[in-house]
Image (cartoon, rainbow, N blue to C red):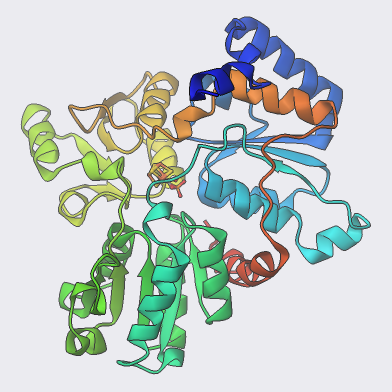
Length: 381
Ligand code: 13P
Ligand code: SF4
């Protein structure tokens, strides 16, 4: 059968034909029927029409914390990407919560299974294990602390749990790096080199103390054992395809065109952009800075397009520009749309959940160790 025919016969296919008003009404009907038993979480990068239907919205840190804290829901629909749904599954179904619910699991549903993260895909567990093995020749394993950005598979979080490491988000990367350096001499930071480098630089760690590890190189990540032995921070060569689109020349252009403009960027942007910016911050911090700024403030913001457009709409008293002449949106976040959300919600209501993200128990147990270390960091997010 051709791929086209498979698509046409998929139970989801009829949802594509429905008008948006009907989809919204049907999703609202499921929300009313399930009440507090259903929790729809929405990341700030989601489309407006999806975010409007979320019970709670947040950045990666806040959504992890919300999934960890909620005691009333019996199902979660995660409007975000795959690693976020995995994290919610681990936190919502951790052993003490399962025991309190007499073993009842909370299904975590990702409305479209193809909503992944290209950055998370840049570090695979076999590559990380291989890197760890090679690094054990330049430093004893207990001297190296692995730190994974939450934008990573559950297997990598579990690796950190097993090896004395921690998870971080862009909201607490500095606290996580400090935590790691209190416990070891070196940090192996994956998968986002930019978040690792920008955070370490802000903490006063010099560029010369950092080494990049390229997993596609056969030996020593493309470096050499002496340099790796000296390095304090080893940065995995991964990046966000959305945030790498912002360039230093865009900052220069905005500064020339709009004197006094404030450049505000996410730490997944490259160092050359971050060092030229006025402010750098996680999604939560970006929103907070704009909300708290004086009316009439001019901003050029370097982060995902949907969030910047929403900030423009919600803050007409400020002058907000998108810090790139080209469209940079997260195409995988964008995959979650009204037809997928309606299909996922109605199946939950019917007791036939679809697209349930389930991390196996052994991986979840190890990943939970690293996630709980993050949730216990001072300041959280
Ligand atoms: P935060 O939500 O942590 O700011 O991260 C942005 C991001 O890229 C989500 O994938
Ligand atoms: Fe991944 Fe970048 Fe999309 Fe975030 S914005 S989900 S890091 S590809």
